[in-house]
Amino acid sequence: QNPMKKTKDLIGNAGATFVNAFTVTPLCCPSRSSILTGQYPHNHGVRNNSLSGNCSSPQWQKGPESQAFPVFLSKLEYQTFFAGKYLNQYGQKDAGHVGHIPPGWDHWHALVGNSQYYNYSLSVNGKEEKHGDNYGDDYLTDLITNRSLTFLDNRSPQLPFFLLLSPPAPHAPWTAAPQHQKDYADIKAPRDGSFDKPGKDKHWLLRQPANPMTASSLTYLDNAYRKRWQTLASVDDMVEKLVEKLKSIDELNNTYIFYTSDNGYHTGQFSLPIDKRQLYEFDIRVPLLVRGPGIAPNQTVEAPVLNIDLAPTILDICGFNVSLANVDGQSFLSQMVKVTRYVFLVQQCFPDCVCEDAYNNTYACVRTLDSSQNLQYCEFADSESFVEMYDLKSDPHQLENIVKKVDPSVLQVMNQRLIKLQSCQGQSCRETFDISRTNMYENHFQSFSSKAFSFFLISLKSF
Image (cartoon, rainbow, N blue to C red; front, side):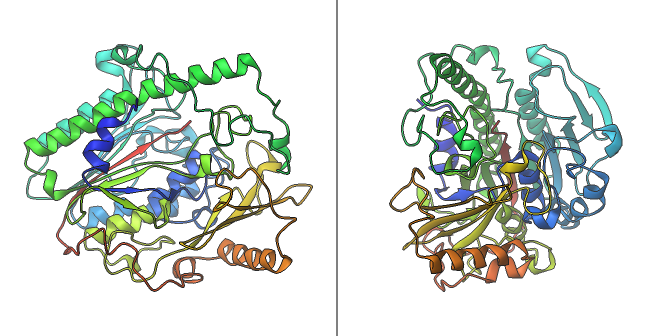
């Protein structure tokens, strides 16, 4: 069983599956801001999901949002379309209300506030549109699908297009479409890896959950897992309809399709209840499937890719000189990339801030991932100055914190890498540790020109 089987067939099997794709921060608004800007959170300044944390704030709008990649696409005469969840605080009175349309977007259908499936408001090109609980008219995932299809029918065929579709699924409240409410009746959360393992030798939050989990907690977790799959079934339908539409208008072979998410999600790992925000694999890994011109089918790409790489990749494909954009990421589809990242940063509201959920869950990690090593080193801004380190080559589920077993010289190197990345900006984020001179993508992608291709970027919510 797989709620995204059609998506895997239509995008992954028709192109590339990136098995080492990561978010640079496992929290909605900062991660989405990184996707839009191509920047680490310490550069775009979005710390958490609150307005005071710079989520869709006036400061965000005047600064990073004005330099987000849709602005450049608009200058390249792309027809741009957005539908779904933008940023958690979008549409708030203190942030321009529904009249604020981020620059670069020609067609704007943005959810006001956080994820809902019914009974929500949209900003439709700057005017409020209220929705109720009628499936045919209001179910948000299907509304996004239908309006994107209408856009494709009405667009100018002489100009390229870009669509960013951001459905709420599988975000709570996990409201499935009527036709999917009985799907996956026997599905349960996987019990493998670190599921229901004690969080020994880990930071304070991981030492709190009851272990083993209670029967009621397991029942709740399994119900939530099943409901999340049921909501994703409509996203799978969305992908199928979009691919069929592109085929019918003879644009499928000219269009890049990206499928990804803004963060991972934990479902019982280390006995943690459902959420995200943690530094571990289950929260920082994201799906990434890409198909399009020049991408050979049925490819598995192991080189690490970050969500800050999406913006420069999209700009690179449409022929824009990425060096003119203020991005920390790098293109992962271009033959021009001769240096491959193997060290990168993951952070949660760090440094110099207090997160909205817990001060003691602020951390910054440096990850070293290449063919010879897979290490993660993390420092917490808590009362314990806690440090965690994992060798994921021998311990892929991060069961053992080896910080007390590692040679101090290794810890010193990792600490220095972390310090440098926390203050990096632009080119320095890409070149500090890029020592491999082999293009790890050359076997997966053909070279392509600066022809104005079109795109879908389908970004999911994961909580």
